Image 1 (cartoon, helix red, strand yellow):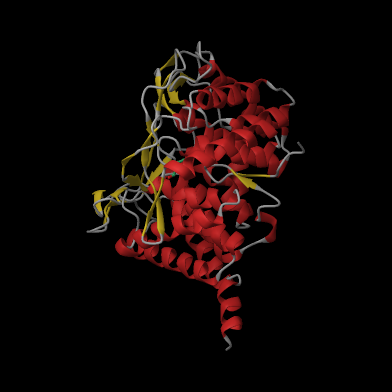
Image 2: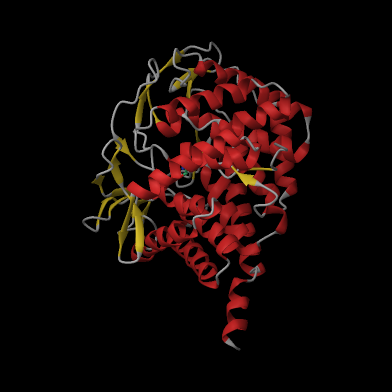
Length: 437
Ligand code: DMJ
């Protein structure tokens, strides 16, 4: 086989692997249905259900829905639709995390409505949106960390940038679907508040006071604690066509690439810098930060994206999974857990689709093989306590269904319907078709 033909063969869809991911998804889903149906998560080792709060919110069912649809598991998906139509309720007297419930539940319902057009789904999304909206009734317009779904009471006045300013996607879609601008207005105002705290060199800090809207530190990052704030400036623009979001993104990414990008041997790590001086102050990264190469390449920064991806890919290959925290200054792991997180698979999918080079398909195969080797068990998959020992823990987060399995499947199957002209993926990988500007 000539070199060129070999490359094309490697970059081509891999139906056998795609089918294997579907089988593994169905196996894990069946375990959730069998042992934990209706609950937020499956605990795979004890074969029980787990709920985040006093009442279950069907988190895994909702998060998994559009992955089931993407893979053509329509019977399984219909069971979720039926639960949403007839059983799901948010009228619970309990405090929930505003951000997590928005990205996991509201994002799922938005995508479900986009896929089904079912008015009952939209009424559930609107109901949840109205309950979450009460979190934004603060003096600054930043959301409180927690909101009580039934009473609308709020608490938690310190919030990080990601949890303060990442609502544009879910709330923006809800506004478009309902033709009621109030959701998008609140979401955009919160993002603008965060953006408004940027320093003279264009960087923002990590934590915010919900009461005053003021930034509380000078710790500038683009990974964990800040990640989806940046992600939604760009993706909000792609989804909704609001040019003000694009302008905010352009200013932000220029500063991030200038001050946070640390080149190390042909690779790029994004560290922490002082938001006022731009001086690099930290070299600790978390596995959540591995989403950033996807965003870079999606937004037209391939030089940075490919080098950042190379850094993360090298770390995975060193350990066989990603450790939760790593210091690229010392080369040491500072937290060895792995929670079945999707970010590297997400970035790899963007590399395959947008950079289109065969080595990225090989990377995806490696991640899948390692995941099966270390995290698979006779029930489903489990998170890992330590990437040195690969000891499994009794937990299976819902984003494994929403994101990890979805990006693996998409990377192998490469269906045209899910390329970046046709969908924008939320931070939880819920796909929506772009709206007319
Ligand atoms: C997901 O829930 C979302 O992607 C979030 O923005 C941060 N990362 C987790 C999964 O690791």
